[in-house]
Image (tube, rainbow, N blue to C red; front, top):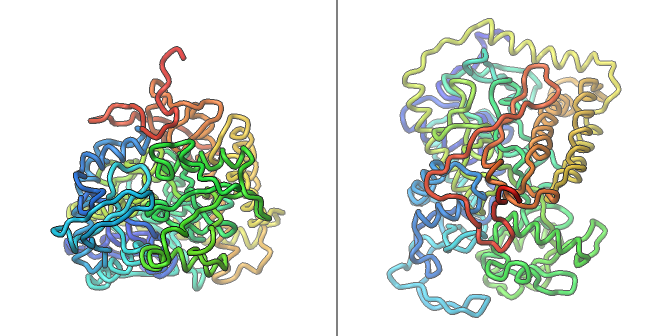
Length: 606
């Protein structure tokens, strides 16, 4: 391909989920030309699968009266186990109510308040006031002081994505789907765009832009079991890391969702527990109040997941051909409630388990779900290390989640950060000039074409899918909910071995055209780099904070570890280079999270 054949635009957004489309909508609203690259048609993005809701402090429902941005801020900081940037968290909570109302104007059919008295599953009586009738309703989610999760039944991500995609169409944003960005075009100081591989033809093409935004979502599929869609392989993070100058932040912070169904790992929303569902063990005993008498099933996700796995390890799991699990009980919520507020859960249980959740228990187990880590950016979304590169959503480490994300804060972040980054990008491209170096662009395209030629000519002995399976098993077995030095050292050693072996791949297919084995082979080295950043970051962090739980260092250590990990992958390196930066504390000093765990910081001399 000649560089003159490149697609040139002002703003290039890699990823068409909620974060990417919200960036494009904002930039296009400022009059800038935008192009979105996507692996799949936008409405098939993983954002569409989000069920539970979006947090915003509206105080519209009885259990949310008195809510405000200060309480949302406090919940977010405590949820992060003081690992977040507090100035980012403050900006986020202030903008979330604006974002949710804006979405209503764009056509999102939020579930609305119905005035009157109601009996909660625990027997409490509440009353929604007549003056609140018709306002946007909220439900309970784990780790929050008030009910503040706005929702559209349990298909919130679906309606948000469709509304956002309609805005993309309305504003004339160009969307090229079935394309995978495989490398960023840069000179070590500035990003000029990306080289993308067409999944229809296998051909490479340069996409050049004044501003490039990574919004590719998470990396869940590098784990053996995950709630993520098959497209969530961390591709955006991987190509940023491969520049050698852009770091990834807090990659050891991996969230496990308490309720992945067994055996498919499909998520059933936290809204099940927010609406009053219980977790039961093999004896049908509701065990969470034994561990968390105040929050019960609605402690933060990291705490609930640990309590569940601990209970299973104590012999209280339900044995099955797929390993032990626990039960989620939502039968008492009633068929009418399940067929309205939790209708997607009902459909999932029917289609994938063959059960009626109004009459049967749901088998669940904690499953990898979310990546708090990602491309490190500043408060405006500018990526560290390269001018002209930005990131948004789950692929970014902004960093408002720290070491644990509260349920409902991810959908909210995609839209709030998309708004913030889109506005920042709009300002950036006003001043940026078109100065794409032709030789640089051609060289990057030729390098990717040569990678395919090398694969076709390889005499190596390694099979990409064998190595990938070993990577997935290593992360799942050694870098999971409970971590320790021995397992983490073994994980780093194994992943390092796999990284060396992936240089000797040999195709078993002909490799021609849009061959999926070629795509997998091109992708695997980057996935293994991400895996090593996670495992080595976890090994070096000798404390427990949020989702990162070290059995050999069970307490948070603010004296030594109130800092963010920055992982770089230098050219020709075999391991990540780990650096650290301090966490910004502007309002709320470190303290107890209030979930019942021994989560306080260790004292000097302990």
